[in-house]
Length: 279
Image (cartoon, rainbow, N blue to C red; front, side, top):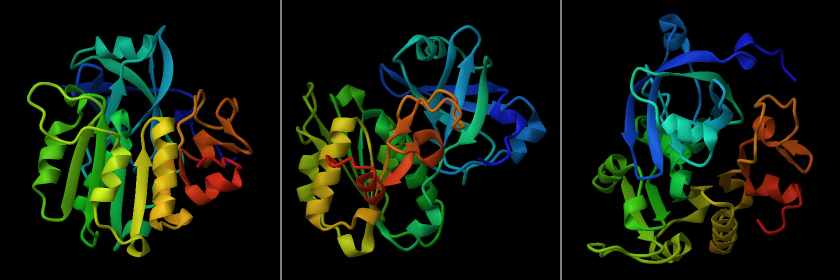
């Protein structure tokens, strides 16, 4: 393991600049480190995560939903799911949280240059892929982007501001689907895998990025393989229950790997070597 930094063990205070309610369960926290010099020097890469903490509430890993091409603040999108995340949802602008990181192996953006991207996301899984999408749109030389996003119901659709921009961007094709409709919804109804047959992508010149619930990931990775995508060009995030973020507690082991250190980004080829046959 590489030499640890002080910030790997001690959280640094970060001030909430703004809170965006994405839906009834997800809020995006726009944050800046309280130390202005540290905030200006702070860097990260899409696919990485931070360990976020509150006094007496514990700590949890949260992926970046912002992109480093837009410095000054970072965005962490948090789904209310437990004691810590519920406490975060009660915070207001001006409050502080603790941050450790960044941690984890990211998406290698250089490898995506010049390639078309097929992004398949479900629910909160769009958050880390949003970091990649906006990073590509901010950087010259990216290929075409096809985004497929599935939600439980229309009111659960997150990042609506971004989606509106993507749907009107000349280099982006963006399709949405929901498990169940609500009044006023006239879009597709069904699993996100059902959208794969409606898009035209060339697997030879494309890389697929997938994030969402484990069952969805498994189904999408299998479908992408049948479409002709090489296992090395199918990338996903495998977010296990990471506790320390630095490979010490080994709570997030995935066969012989640790998700917090060797991931959370893995290719399908790497997962197959870990004997995850269902993927």
